[in-house]
Length: 165
Image 1 (tube, rainbow, N blue to C red):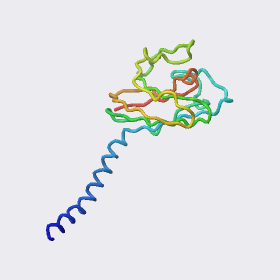
Image 2: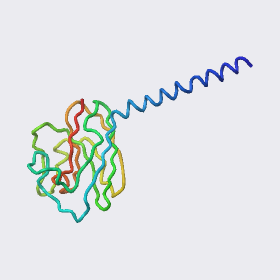
Image 3: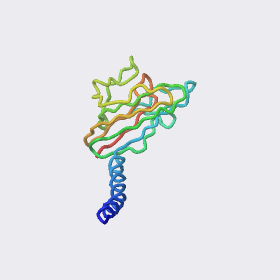
């Protein structure tokens, strides 16, 4: 009876420790999670074609974009949780390594970045309106371009930069 009581008390004492450990395990991972909301102002909105990286246009006038929960992460496993908040447009999210001032291999004919030449690292492929997905990538320190590469979308301002330290 005493040994049973000790076992129960020991088990009950371990519950808070186990809960603490599980909660902290989640926190370690959550530091490397970036939530990405893909948005647009609808199919009737005018698209600009001069808001690519290095462009001169004011990106605040974009009719499409990506909103990141944060723009920095620790080197290692980085999780991108993506949701397409559009009501009627398919979007995607691609991740490419980027160096400041770099000219991206953009095709005017295709109206998108040549992902293979640019060093495509991973993506959440074409998301229907209201859908979500995620991708986990092993990223080294540096800068990364996060963009929608559906034709015309990148040049309409659908990109952000993430710094991995």
